[in-house]
Image (cartoon, rainbow, N blue to C red):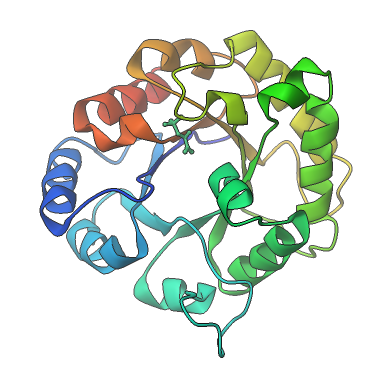
Amino acid sequence: MRQALVAGNWKMHGSRASVASLLSELLGAVTAQQVEVAVCPTFVHLAQALELCVGSPLAVGAQDCSHMPSGAYTGEVAAPMLADLGCACVILGHSERRQYHTESDHLVAAKLTAAVSAGLQPILCVGETREQRESGAAELVVLGQLTGALAEQTDLAGLVVAYEPVWAIGTGLTATPQQAQEMHAYIRRCLDAFDTVDARATRVVYGGSVKPGNARDLFAQPDIDGALVGGAALIAADFLAIIDAAAAV
Ligand code: PEP
């Protein structure tokens, strides 16, 4: 039995005031239950979020990390720094990093190694663009991203994969529960081919315009183990409703 995970990707949003207010709403409502819940604010808000969430069921994670453990990498934040701060997880290979920062599978693989070595739980994002889906290449693209990120890894216990079709991120378009289930089942079959991953124990969460209105149908699918939530994670009532939908499965 895989425990559902609902993680909020706050992207480049927030101020100290909005972080305090969003977290106070979440902390007042999230109870230790069968769903694991995480929030991923910007780097500059991590310390504040960690301080507010200490001793609560809310885990805090980062949206990215460097591929190097330390050194002359101006502007970067290393995985051991995030672990030292108290972060539990880190999002890697998000499509916005791949698109705006030209992150390759090779770089994502190196970041994954850095995250795992630091003891952070990686949330590895994969997903195809609209053109790739329309041309029938979606599975091939996802397989390439998985292979690129995982092939050289030696210990992937605790890995979370987030299937995030690029065409559904921030667009209001969502994969249908059936489309998502098909890809999640495919991802699990691909994971089975890596001896470093226990595919049946690995959580595969869905991301792409998850909202209170579509969460329940998505979570009802047998291979959807929760969600990586963008826009709706910034609205406490919506994020809480998505957590409730995961708990209701
Ligand atoms: C995301 O950025 O990971 C995401 C899924 O965004 P949204 O929920 O806004 O589509």
